[in-house]
Length: 252
Image 1 (cartoon, one colour):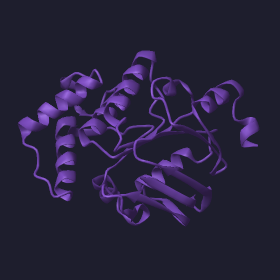
Image 2: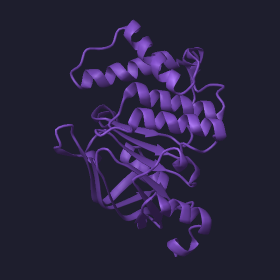
Image 3: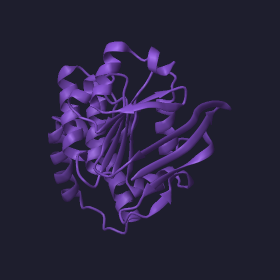
């Protein structure tokens, strides 16, 4: 579904990604772990199309539903979203004056229009929103509030997972979704990721510092990113090894 080859990227002319390669197939969940400054968030922003992140070498392709490869880096951010890519932020932004319900309905219908589908009616959308909010144990009253305004860190992350459920992406890139979550919220978010994304036609790239989220969202592969490239890959046991021993020896 996602194929990255020899990806190099800079931020403010500073090289961050230095030859990163990674392939994720449909039906797989991959986790990327690594020390601060390794390039984990840069990878997510490059894939999402955030301005200011310049790709200087390499490629990234994202397969269409029919399997045909398309150049992800040649697409605008809204085109990537319409193609089925979702980016979950480490620090979800607040949008004062814009209700969650309105934001999500407009976002979903814009994607449906890009795919040649009819927009959802208000009633059908609210039914969908209630279903996805229920998965994340979120009260519908919170969806009537401005986007993330006054939300705790855990509420922002749960709200973002509700967004993911409503938009129903094919590939979710989740940048440190576990940061700021207490034990209960971590379990709820983990269960939500599994319910929404653990399907044979979807894939997930989890970016995290810690193994704890992987207790709830079991990855197929774990990758260590250090100094801008993947230096080691393995099964879920690799995350446990990193938890015990840290990154120093692997990232050296």
